[in-house]
Image (cartoon, rainbow, N blue to C red; front, side, top):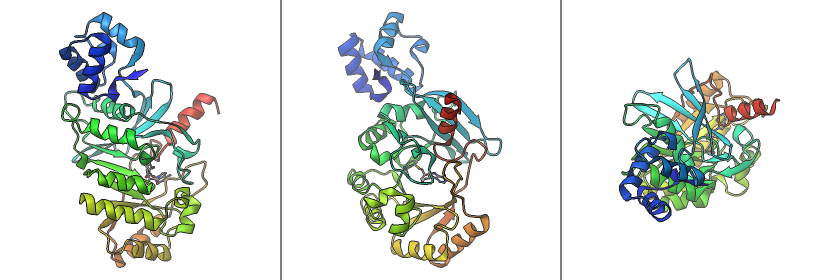
Length: 348
Ligand code: SAH
């Protein structure tokens, strides 16, 4: 199957003229429908026989919303998207005063094996194509009828490790920032990684202005190996050095993500080690308590210990804040909704 949302306007025009003898202005009309995530049946200004032909070989909407949960607490929406091969992925729309941030997935599942994360429990099924990452944005953006841009910010923080799907993620960034397409600025996009060092450096060398987040969670290599196997390949020092390099090359301040797990990474000694690792670096630490995942048995740090940890960091001169938890009542953390959905379908 050819995913039409994988293509920029010039690519789509080339493809349609070469294979369907379509005129460039018709290709443009189709591109506009695709940007609004409209399926072939809804492309009312396109000849019916062309649409029927396209249906045989092509997919128009690469990530279809099949389920939506809306939080009663803060209006956060969790979406389940279905892909053309029946796989499902999830995304979250968080509403802020300045706009709406969509958290998108970059892979079906994940092979990074972080012990606290629901996305990785079943391993990696497959990479998402650029158009399947973009499709999540386009489908949710289309919900804001009338408004030109419903999704104003994007975070690559859903299921998957974006730097383990480097080429497709880079292509996605080109498509989503394309002035002919949805045209969201890189400054409004964040990419979160568990620390695939060579690809952090590659991204820096591309001179992008993306916001980078490193999921660190522990500054001690031996302890981090227990919860994040990626540390066997790249040490925390290498990961932090790559972030330093990213900042030097791009001028974008890196965010360090630190999820507090009860009695595993929340002591004063941990704060001290973190402070010394990040010394002389222009970074900000986002602290959050672990969102318990039924399958992992790990517990989040208590409210009082979280506050203490923030105080330690403050005393040690590390810029840190607590990240707001949102959508607690709609299967909060990474990969949880998808797991429930798959469990439901398997009858367990
Ligand atoms: N693979 C990327 C992006 C996906 S995970 C990465 O590792 O950054 C997005 C963020 O959610 C990461 O910081 C991850 O560590 C965090 N996370 C995953 N499961 C969590 C949970 N149960 N509670 C709190 N944070 C979690």
